[in-house]
Amino acid sequence: MIAAARARLGVLGGSGLYDIDGLAGRSVVDVETPFGSPSAPVICGRFGEVTIAFLSRHGQGHRLLPTEINFRANVYALKSLGVEFILSASAVGSLREEIDPLDIVVPDQFVDRTRHRADTFFGRGLVAHVSLADPVCARLAALTADAVREAGADVHRGGTYVCMEGPQFSTRAESELYRTWGAHVIGMTNLQEARLAREAEICYASLALVTDYDCWKTDEEPVTVDAVIERIRLNAERAKVTVTRLAEVLPETRSCQCARALDSAIITRRDTIPAETVRRLGPIVERVLGGRPEA
Image 1 (cartoon, rainbow, N blue to C red):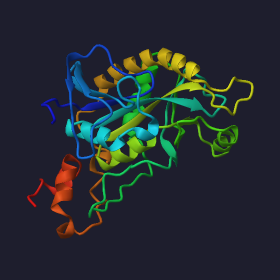
Image 2 (tube, helix red, strand yellow; image 1 turned 60 degrees about the vertical axis):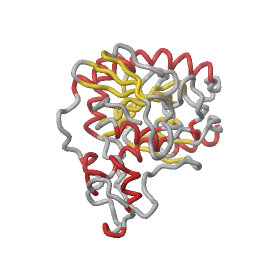
Image 3 (tube, rainbow, N blue to C red; image 1 turned 135 degrees about the horizontal axis):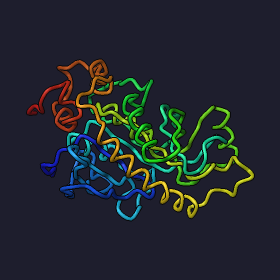
Image 4 (cartoon, helix red, strand yellow; image 1 turned 180 degrees about the vertical axis):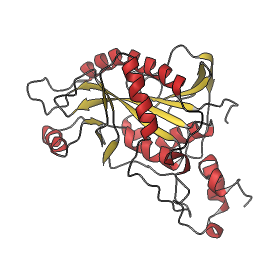
């Protein structure tokens, strides 16, 4: 069941960012979706005039592996609450000498190295092919990078995020390979979110919180969970400040492609789309396919 809460900005919190402080009118919203339960109840509240919906992607107590995250339920839950913008915060490893631990990267590209994940809302008689050439909303990314600077962090605007399966960290050979590809950071979660956000016509940007140099850098100790947690703790406060700054400058209206991603994406002939599929997708397709018809 979905409560009456409505939010414009959704925040997906990753390792070390399990809550967000300073929200006025704070409430906890339990959301059920056609894709199952999201990772955790959604925390809603206001920063100034903007209502935020915060969702801890790994669940309460960090109990979900990256592969176990129900990405579809998480994004559907935020869409059902009215979210138009998603900021995704997550721990990453650096693949470049110039990107130091505790820096923050706002990537604009992704490479998929996952294998076991559902990453589309479509199927069951409805085929859609959204454009993912530019998987990050350029306007939201620019606002996010500015907000990071205001939070006092060193920010890198743009770059490629390699999304790996995990939960193990990379082999040294893999890490070196990704560097030859020109990639900048590596993580385990963001690409599925970017794909689904685009299908849901939600603007998406990543806040990649650098914790280590991955294992390519042989003069550094190999990455450990302890090192990751300590560094993400230090970056978590700046991530929270970034969210507050971003909430202050969100545009009143959206003129980007993200907001109309389904306009030319649905290839299935309208009169053959099963009514049950339209009902199931609800707010994902409501703008382009209308209401939820009776079977």
